Structure formats: structure tokens, C-alpha cells
Length: 157
Length: 148
Image (cartoon, rainbow over all chains, first blue to last red):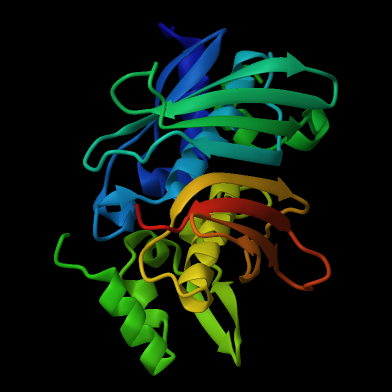
């Protein structure tokens, strides 16, 4: 079967999200400690046409998605987890013409809520462009029945 | 990219009272399809329903990041339109509370500047779909506005 089932689940999750496909977001790395996604640089997501710096909204989308999908690292089965809130602190602007990576981990899982945190970076994870915290609500498996769950968990689900 | 002059675009938009050309200069605003409705001395920002903005395919619902990006761009434009800032403000932090699912339909946003200092502005943003009194999300952001 697969080398890395977590990464495959993350990639399948991602491929169900149309807007993420539009931005070209892909799964970069995944293990029990967290998930990394990649947002490729493109002219279409530039927020300041004078400088070519990408829009904060594209980074928010990357980090909301990374935090949301990082739940696959701690949940045995796919669950829909809508975002309750998300906060992003920008350390410095992203450099133009470079991809952005988003890392997120779930640092507390309760029966109802999942607390996540992470950061966005370009070349060096130790010099993040942004820090993120996000809180997600667990809707339980009942609500998750449907095509997305089947897509993410495969036939086993 | 260096041929674009935001300051001149902002000046032209003020004179014509038409901010759509300014929005069209911003690739990300164009990607989402953001429009601006001028209402006297106020403005409402409009995100028309666009299948490319869907996140959750089951409902279907807009991607939370799209709603956040729309609200951040609304705040940026609001600062350019009403606060006499000639250049693009820089985001410092952004915090969003999702209150209801953002369904696949038109979304609106309005901004309130709670405080503008020389260097930093604090903006609150409210987004709704069917009824303004039932927002789908509220957000607040700080922007650097001194152009440094």
C-alpha cells in the first residue's frame, strides 16, 4: 500500500476542496506530529501589485486549510471540523516569487473541540512569516457520512 | 509589476468615485471576484457567489480562507477609500470568528475603523449573506498605515 497513509489522507482531503485546487495547494509532509502543506507562488494571488507580495488572504486560506486538515494526524477517522476561529500574526511579509509552506499541529483534542497551532514559512521554518492559532469544532462521525469521508478514508471508512 | 502606481490609482478612484478599477488592479481581489458598492459616504463590499470559492463541497460552503481574504481585502480598501491613506496598508495581524456556515451565495462585508493612529489602524469587519443582523463571520485586523 502507501508509504505514508497520513500524507495520502491529507492529499485526498485537499483534493475535495475546490478553492485549494484553484490555488494549487498540495500536501508536502505529514506525520503524527503535524502536517505541512505547500502554496505555490502565482501572480493570481498577489495582493500588492507594486511589490508582487502575495495577499494575506491566500496565506489565511493556506493556514486555515493546514490547521483544519492537521486533524487527520490525531483523528482515526475523517470528521468534518469547521473552523470556530483563526488568528494570524504576521512576522514579516512573504517574499515574492517563492512558495509558502504551512505547518500545523493539534495540541489539544477534546470530545468537542480541537485546538491547533502552526506557522507559515518560505525558506527557513525557524524564521516564519506568520504564526497561527485556530480552533475547530468536532461535528462527530454522523455528520461526516458522505462523499468527502469516503474520498479521504477510502473504502475502509 | 513595478509599473503599477497604487497612489495614482487611489487618487483617480477618489476623483471618479469608482473603486472598481482599483480592485481590478489587485490580482487576489480579481481572483475572488470582489466588488465594491458605494453608498453615499459609506461602502459595502460584495463577494458574488463563485464556484471557485467553495471549500466544503458537501454543503456546499465557501472556503473559510476565502471569507477571511474577502474581509481582509474589504478592510484594506476601506482604509484607502475613507482614511486618507494613499498607499497599500500592511497587515500586522488578523483574527476571525466564524459564526455560521458561509453558504454558496453572495456575501457582503462592511468595515468599521475603531482607531487610526499615525502608524497603526484597527479595523473591525462584519460579513453576512442573507441578513445583516445574522453575520456569518466577524473579524478584526491591525494594519501598518505609515507606508514605512
